[in-house]
Length: 409
Image 1 (cartoon, rainbow, N blue to C red):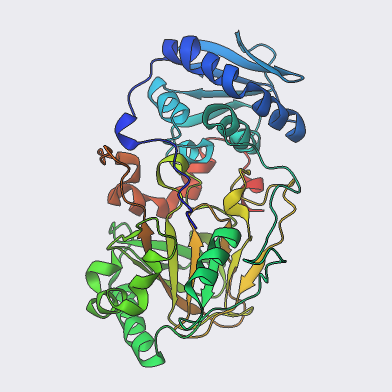
Image 2 (cartoon, helix red, strand yellow):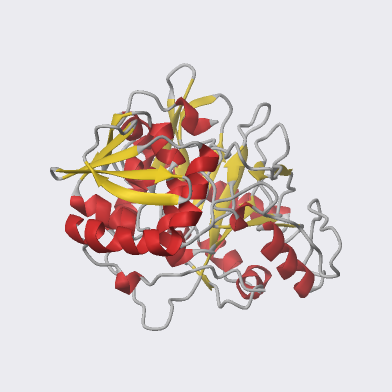
């Protein structure tokens, strides 16, 4: 039942020079995966792309089932400028097209940000050998080989092989009645307490704005450290059994974030559009981790339930947003107080905006153990400080280009 899709080790990340990328990395990738990447480029009708890297300019050219590197950027409809360090991270899947934009490490000099984001599946096909998604690639089967019931809601009394199989096939779970309402009320009080104490730019919260321009805290970072009640609940057997579902040795992160979903938010990272948790990069180092949403108040269609796209964890698609080629249909997980939702880090999901009632939820989860011989290096682009700075990520993305409308669709 493994969902471990890793192909790289963190310990192997190293600085790649522009010369090494042009002379070795890209030629080897083209030799190994060029045909698959060319198919993705043609199918998605991607514009010709040029790079300006520390004074060196070159293009990726695609014709039929062939890809080649050519000097100069004269014919490129899309031109991207970045440093050699950013290119090195991109070539090694440490940061994605979107990840570079979110950390202000890329500049779109010709074309649009949507063009740049659209290239991500083709680059992962080329550099990591992950076939870009095509309609019909993903099917859903139950343990007996019949159609999988994607609307199924599980309880801890259900058979573990069935739960694990559903997670592997669909990339998500809805588990009913894990915690009781009194326990959720206590954790909800802790969220309220820290939301009330939050201050803009405190490095411990995310903020958002309503239509009147009023700013409010919507997410408590490092909530695991702040709520003893939450630590007690996620440390219990009622929660920890989730880490053993797939047999991959998932370990609890010992971290959590407490969220409120107010009405009328128009700006900020509150009601997130369709995205993957690995959308910024590092899929090949970390997927699939498990993200668990503990329903403090429950959520339905008018209070901002979680949306998921079943099977998207098995699809190399454009993110954020829903890839136009994707034939996978979304679902909304309507929860009751004390329910838990689980989604793979490579599952496409979103936070629907509440329209009549606000809601509260805590997100925590489980990560895969390090691969043999691996170790965690310093990760400045994924540190606690970097996480806090995502509160104003929309402004930083907008600074790289003139149009970002397509990113939220």
